[in-house]
Length: 427
Image (cartoon, rainbow, N blue to C red; front, side, top):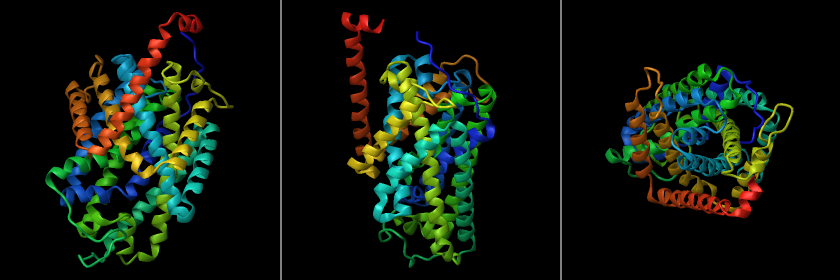
């Protein structure tokens, strides 16, 4: 088997936690409360808690596996090692395709906040700039993530303060979106939890960077669980404050719920602060996403599940240069040719499959800490599948087709490699 050049272990607990938390407090925190409230109504906090519970199962499984296999690639690697090549490919393909669409959505969100009339060119510029930062090395990525995370946390604290000081809004208020309408509840909790879940999926970035973390057996579990705990507390607090401050039908109809919370308070003059925070959050999430997708693509290329050149490293502090540039090119292509905000909805199904594989792989581990019993992994698989198949039908069908195309493509390539000509070429 070919010996691959290794990345350098340069990330400590603080940097790894910041990258995970920066992903979980991305642009989603500024918009997810509205569609979740539309589905769950007054039971929004129950949906957030349910999403957090499923995310906890996944986080524990990710921490177990990353400590045992401290390599780049996350669940793609874990699935191959513990379950076999096909489950590993399923996880990797779902992550790379789904999160590439998410990258484009984050970039476009940034462009819409900064320059609404020129959103796409600004989004492309952001992708180019952040790819450049990533190519300078993982420590530069972690440093910029810390700065952006500080801006986001300050913004969220301001939103919380505005919600507390009020005045509280009656049903006569107006939101930034469409007029107030009907909201759900009851069975709407499950699809709402499916939406909120993706706000908690940022800890996967820590696992995908496993090859660049110092003392991974100690650092990765602490960073994963610490980042998730911080995000869950923030989402629950914000959800409770928004429900107390805005009528639930106004919250459900909003296109910018945190901005509405400030504009409908005595601190309305600070609305530009929220817009700046949303822009910073979009950049932070985009930075972490590009990094994670690039590392997963590199890992898949090492195993010849993606073209071999994507495994090449370069730079003073080695990074997967070819994979990073390829990811950036795909994201720019999506920005130029698709309705990104619609396409990204399909990624939800793929990412839930990714975490189902994570939990299934962790279930097969023999050595496990007390806080990670097998039943927790089984609950994680069940939770992921329930949330996946209660997503809107368009998301399930759309991403299901992408997953099927990837599996069929791999089967075709493997069939060609069995031919004598290819066997000679691959020796």
